[in-house]
Length: 510
Image (cartoon, rainbow, N blue to C red; front, side):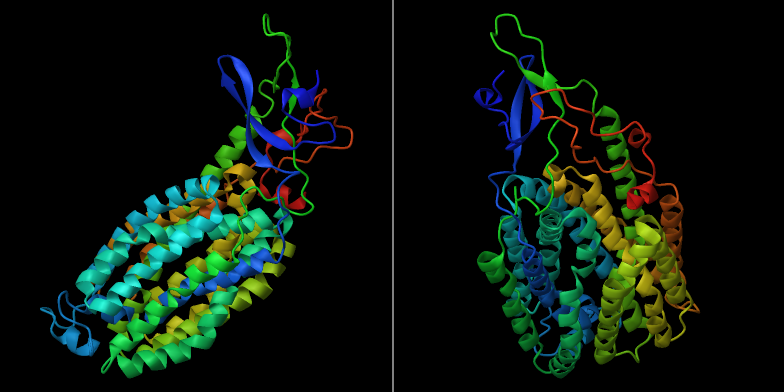
């Protein structure tokens, strides 16, 4: 049989990788990934995506120091020019804002959940670049709304709905990195992903804090206008500088051809067809699916803790530690940036080198338990800064879980898998804020005031226990030199030992 005439694969090596689909009882090729004719991904592309992510998060950083004031401002009372005066017009002066925050974050999480799965599908269908652009546009809309109206009655509902597009940026960026970075270097690349944004935050936090303090009682609309202007930058950058990576080949990666053998001639067909070896990948594929499900479930449980922490931390500080003003919260943002940068660039590579991925993941969960325990016992704002010492370890979790998901996913399903990972995170942000808000309202006069953080401690501890039980099969090995071209008899790509599905520590050793 002449493979070139059949339109499947050419003699020197595979041009296309196929999924074999049944059409009327005959196996037919369905092309997914172009190798020989595809562009080669440039390592410099990953630095462009770091810049894009920095620009995409900059506008959100601008409003972070005054976010507790925004959620405590009543609807249909203008926050301009004096947001403090607007809060005083509230029907419940001095309201905690926990209910509004929970409603906003949970509603936004619902839209992010839907957006995560749509973004994953869209990344694999229309490409990574259009999804990034849509995400940047969606993030900009609420910023222009608050700049033009100065009314939370418009900003909060619209910010909630636009959460649909927030997942677009996260999913597209994670998929982009999986496209251009070889698997052995991917964890480090995910670790560096947020560093440029944090450097911008580190430099800009003191300026943002001073600007917020100077304008919140006199001309807060200036801050809103600057924020809206900055939200345009990621749109321009993605249009001009971000390449499309769908179908690109990573330098040095060896494409793994499908295992196919000649099929007996079909009566009346006059030719031979090729099909997959029956059951060849069934066991490994089922184990990969189980491993991915375990990773997604672990991510959901831990995100229940981190989602509540992210939603309530600054509001908790504003209500219980009034001595920590806008400048204090800006300084905390800078301290968090320094901590995460040091953790990502210094500690994470060391941990991956000596402890491997799974024990690094477990160490991160120990750190998360310690962070929330410190918040639970806090009696003054100093305890909040002490908790940052444990953030050095807790920061590992998101990076390692993204790498594990990318490793488990087939190459042509990277977008969908990253979408599912983001979806489990956003599902947790739907469920956790109401739980935390109810606890904070119930115990807002407790001593110490951080008792509600015990929920986060429990979720993190459960996640740690789950991580001790996770195992997943190894990556498929590239074809050996003894394996012949798919037009002939193909040797199995997985040994009998590999089929035993050892845990992740063994994968790291390989």
